[in-house]
Image (cartoon, rainbow, N blue to C red; front, top):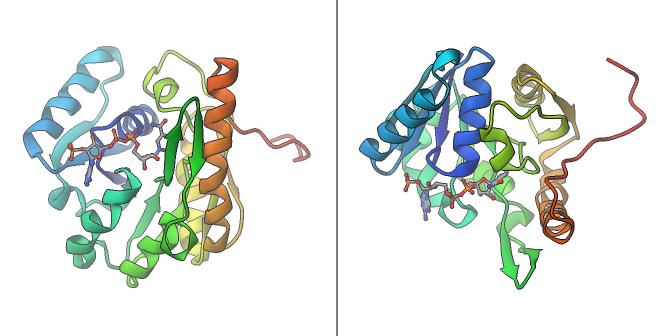
Length: 219
Ligand SMILES: NC(=O)c1ccc[n+]([C@@H]2O[C@H](COP(=O)([O-])OP(=O)(O)OC[C@H]3O[C@@H](n4cnc5c(N)ncnc54)[C@H](OP(=O)(O)O)[C@@H]3O)[C@@H](O)[C@H]2O)c1
């Protein structure tokens, strides 16, 4: 599958790109500046020469042509990024990983975007796309280090069962991650807001804690 990551030049997009490429997917990093995307992609491929990662860098416009598209810009740039791409994104699964947060001292606090979450806002702007929300709680710094094993549960929600299924399958492709269907897109508000708690815990305890749910049967 060809996976596009809008705003993929940042830490979150880069981390997701290397993990998906390591799982065998073809990843296209998007940027407002195609040259920057190409340079970031070349750096990532060059950092892990033994892995032969299939990562390329293009403009956000070209990135939107991928089969499945992840939205990885800051939350306040998300709507302006996807709006002009609505035709290219129609009929596709669009995974929102953006969190609306603000830093206050050594804490992160959750903001309330229109419609309660970034993901719900994107679904309203992209009515012909199948928006899901996922990947919010993963620490980008750890994601980008392929040598570091990941162990985490990744919550997924969407109003489209097919999009939830596709997103859980995408998460499951990454070694050490388990995708968990957490319900409708209404759950994105709580999922996104919890990121503020998790980052604050990580700052206070100087760790890279991730989410793991107990009580599921062993895989
Ligand atoms: N960092 C994490 O650990 C982490 C983990 C999970 C989820 N997230 C979420 O993932 C998203 C990206 O996180 P990040 O840390 O990678 O963010 P970031 O570095 O601030 O931004 C990612 C990329 O988005 C583009 N961008 C920046 N401002 C923009 C704007 N106003 N409009 C359109 N594009 C813009 C930039 O790429 P170009 O300049 O190349 O276009 C930038 O490299 C955030 O919403 C964050 O909440 C982050």
